[in-house]
Amino acid sequence: MIQISGLVKTFRVHQKSPGLGGSFKALFRRQWVDKHALSGVSLAVGEGEIVGLIGANGAGKTTLVKACSGIIHPTAGDVKVLGFNPFERRNAFRRQISLIMGQKQQLWWDLPAADCFLLLREIYLIPWAKYHERLDFLTKTLGVTELLTTQVRRLSLGERMKMELIAALLHEPRVVFLDEPTIGLDLTAQRAIRQFLLDYRGVHRPAMLLTSHYMEDIERLCERIVIIRAGQIIYDGALREVISRFARHKTVTIRLSAPLVKPARKAADLSSLLPGLAPGAAELSEVGDDLLKVRVLVAKVTDVSALLLKEMPVQDLTIEEEDIGTVIEAIMREGMQP
Amino acid sequence: MTPLMEARAQAAVLRQVFSLELRRAFAYRVEFWIRFAGVIFANVAIAYFLWQAIFAQTGSLTIEGYTFRGMILYYLLVPLTENITRSSTEHGAVSAEIYSGSLTRYLIYPVAFFPYRYAATAASGAIAVTALVIVLTSYGFLIGWPPEMPFSTVAVVTGLVAACYGSLLNFLLVSMVEMVAFWADNTWSLNVMLMFSARLLGGALLPLSLLPSGLQAVLHYTPFPYLVSFPVLAMLGKVDHAAFGEGIMIMTSWILALGAIDALIWRRGNRKYTGVGV
Image 1: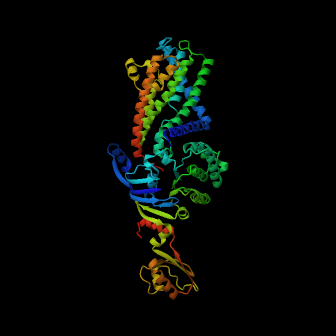
Image 2 (image 1 turned 90 degrees about the vertical axis):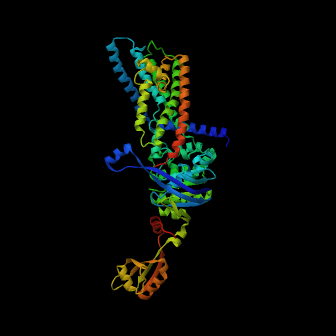
Image 3 (image 1 turned 90 degrees about the horizontal axis):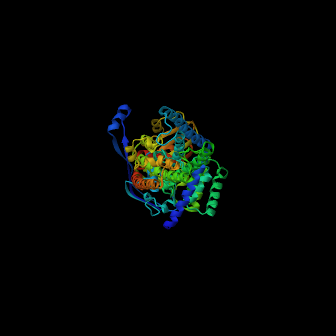
């Protein structure tokens, strides 16, 4: 449903030196630099798929969403959504897509949501019977039926976001772009919206492209993620594979049957506690009276576990995968390769 | 979907936008009435004291065909007409949408931007037409029209037609300047220049017949007089059929030219749009 090939987007940005002198100079001569927001991105998203776009601020996630929804014109490359070139903005295309922006409201601030939905009914040519049926379903599911006649500006952030979701899904789009849909919401509202999106996907099977800085959004909603760094895709695959392909460490936790005489508080102490430990294979991450947490290179987990069992009075030993958020953060920061 | 069905669908959207904007205007009733009454009162009060002094100074009973009462009626009609032609939602609205990224809404929804914006503007215009009719009727009953410019229903209706047509002309003119926001960081000064030029050269500050005849002849072919002076004079019965027909022709030419220019700027500007803040 979404086909992107070799997408490039370059923005020309005006640069100004700081201070009054810089401002004065800019009056006569402006300096421009090219900022490459996307550098040859290729991606395909199919029906019923929710793909999570992950990247640091400025990595190019939102630019990609904008290019796919037809807001911005690509510098080069090819984008096809439902067989349309988004930038041509054909009405037949726009009637089948939706864009939900957590940081930018689309509803009319001064009007009750019910009035905004009436306009959207006309815009998307929704027959009355279907309109009532869908509105009824969406408002009940999100628990906002009582708020339909309240002015949008008088709603709380969470209530407003739910109204934005209804506005975006009233016409049952086949492709949905979600840009930070849960930003700023409390945990209850976040959970409600995630569940709602999953239910919606189950029933309507749209292709969804989601950007979020909340790892829980990604973990709960996406089976597939795309990691973008400096305008390039550095990972496109299953979320669960991120750990197996990228995680460099595991955490080995041991509970001791007797407290350590001399608590090992530094990596150097760990090597003195475990003679034969290969340099750099493990480091202590937490030390308690009867507990040690050791961060171990994935390749050395068996060796280090064996050493721990041999050298320490171990009562219990557990091995944990690295937190997925930490792994993704490292990938984004260091551009790690699998 | 056939082109006819598409046109019908778009017309239905515009009707809804019109209605939505009316509801939005009424949502701020106090602000709406204060602005309405305030602008008219300020305009008429300034004109009253200024022209009272001028008439007293010159000692004449008429200036360029206006008696004092006629002059005050002119200044009463100016803000009422400007409310129609220069609707409140226009100045700065399009550029603000470009700067804030709110324009994105119109790019995502299957609607045409200019008709959508104009339908919203026209809603304010419709309120202004109603206000004009109410004020003129009250004026006729309470004060009475000046003898040199007797009330004529045909003249008022003709003037209203010109004012409504003028709102389209003004919309295209303002949109052209506002779309510079696709390239420039700020269009405030351009907006102010346009607004000031339109008011001065359109006859809002003083009747154009008081300007030198050479300048009047040049202005005749610019869009400015058709935003204020032309509809006001038509309402006062000072525009005959031939002059009205010529005025409408000139307005049509400008509307076509500006429509083409706006469409071109829109196409080019869209390529520059970054949807900032989105």
